[in-house]
Amino acid sequence: MHRARFDAAVLPYLDDGYTLARYLTRDDEAARDVVQEACLRALRHVEGLRGDDGRSWFLAIVRSRCVEWFREQGRGSVFVEYDETVHVPEAGDEANGTDDYRGATSERVLAAVDALPAVFREVIVLRELCGLSYRAIAEVTGVPAGTVMSRLARARDRLRVILTTREEP
Amino acid sequence: MTGHLAERLDAFVDGELDTVALHEAELHLASCAVCSRQVASRRALSGVIRGSLPRFTAPESVTRMPVTRTPVTRRPWMGLAAAVALIAAAGIGGYDIGRRQADASGMREAVVSSHIRSLLASHLTDVTSSDRHTVKPWFTGVLDFAPTVVDLSAQGFPLIGGRLDYIAGHRVPALVYTRNRHVINLFQWPTTRGDVPIGSSVDNGYNVLHWVTDHTEYWMISDLNDAELRQCAVLIH
Image (cartoon, rainbow over all chains, first blue to last red):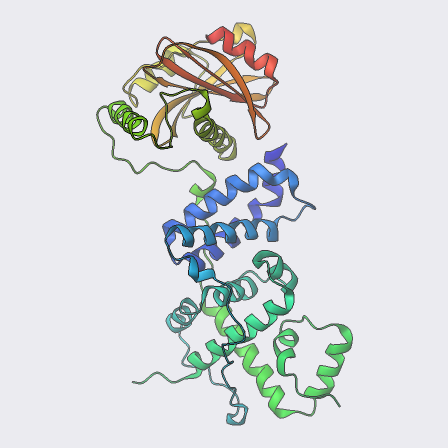
């Protein structure tokens, strides 16, 4: 029965799905619609799910629905493959001692994550909030695990630079 | 002694290194202050992110049917008829309720989605009653036409209630029947079309029946087998 399988494999991850959609779209209403449509899609195709854990599978559906949402908004370029070669990683300043994150208030962290390109934002959310492994993130985002690792590194480098900079009084 | 963690920094912090690489990294960290500071910085950053970024809770409505945001007009079917006429005149796609079978695939899809939503939401009925004298009046308060409500308990298709649903943006009544624990949704609405005999199709594993009689269009859907579902449709027809 579709429904029982859906309940077991997908329902536990509704909040993860909504959190991902919410950070990607940055819009409550859009996130709700995205997850609702993802649920319908998941229910229709749950017979094709291999294994009993539908987390990566469901999150991948949510993500692809987000990509479509951006496209419908005429903002498809948000998810255009990020060219890793032209973006020089931010230089680390190892000599300056331990980084100081005491100025990183919740508002600043949220603003910094919101300001990341979508492909960086999603790996941060999937790793730090959803606790996914590189392999699972790779399944959700459709890129190799090596790319997940380098995107996470770039994303964290950016966040580090923004959040360790003292705000001007 | 191996080199700096460099691009392996994040994999180390995230516990993604294999045993050999992990051992090498730990050996290196024991004697490298620069890499140790980077690891400490990454861990601090993760702590800050996890401690500050809100996790969101999915609203309950995501597993329920979409809530209409269309303001309630006195005669929504007038608007629907006008829209259909416009679509027909313009020759463009969309839910063309007044046209022939080939155009019905969009409507069938909407019916299938509605059926799935009703199962998904554990929200099969707004009014739960096997008595058609209770179900029918309930609809008169929310629709501007009176749906046909037939009780088929004696024939083995007990009515369990009714629900207000939305198809192609319009309010429609859904009557819910059962047969051996299979749920049957029956949708209906007024149409200007002439009679159409019962036709069946399969969509997403569901049997879907469609017919028009007395200027009312009917869609019936269930995972019940085609023969029994058709039997139910014939009784209503």
